[in-house]
Length: 402
Image 1: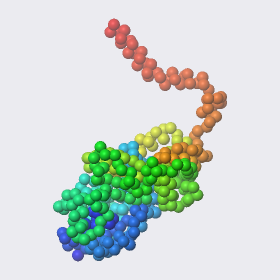
Image 2: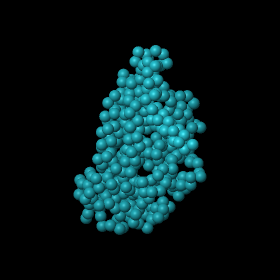
Image 3: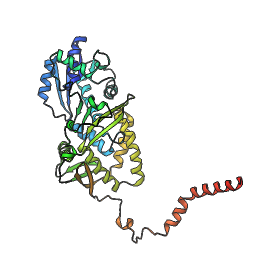
Image 4: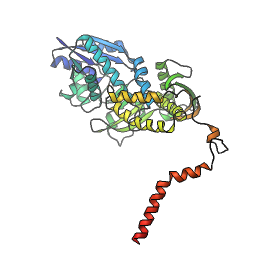
């Protein structure tokens, strides 16, 4: 029998895909659970997949690679989609796909199946990445072909097969969790008139219950890479620590109506405390160490980079090229940043670096040998010359017309 590798999470969609595949295809099912920090019981996941009909289950621990090869790039780019979304799901999908393809090649599987809906971005992210890594593998996307029309239908199907699923019709949110974030979609969030309910939070404490005393956090960077936070050096532990600390202060909640790649708007609630803190620290250090033109162009590139990641184009030349540019900009982004965390706020509390392009003697209002106040007059005349010429020509035309 041919084999199909299933991207398996143990959630609603992938739980029902196993029996559905067995009913509709003559294929052996190999389930692959890629651990990017979901914090779930992987042995329970394994047993559930086997009980549902998989012949084999791979549990791939990709947390270290996720942080060091993907999230490190996110921090250096400070990638934010549409001004809010720190791309937690988007950065996780390429590494999950990479592991799926590796297992498919190892097992000699001709197919990869996923549980993404036909309205979502993830179907694009998975399948475009599969094309890039192994164009000979075929994709099975049940949500685009089966008779199940809604999450309610999916719950009914799971119940009919005796499969335990982590959602109910009363608590029907679609949740995605990894080391970087937790996302919530669906249910009453689909009506944009509804405020979201903080009771859904998984990591972050609602502001009303956040800590009443601030914390000062110290973050050290070396060439744009986070190397230490409050004495912690391990990259995974750093993310976990900042998620816990930031979460206690109500930091990292985003409520966004974003533009999906497939053409519609979608509302999501995202929890990203560690990412929010690290981005602010990195921004503060770049303000001190990057020259104006590099900083401004990097801000422009960041928006394009975010779109590329969001749109599932990780394994492409353009992403690699922008990463190369960003890596060049990070050569002097070394130093320590202090931040105050309090009631949802991340407040700058000091920047310490040998590479600062700021000199208080030059920038102060006092005397400096490198800056003569009189020089500003000539600069302003030259800088404003195009504006002055345009005004003179306009007034001359007015005189002619008169």
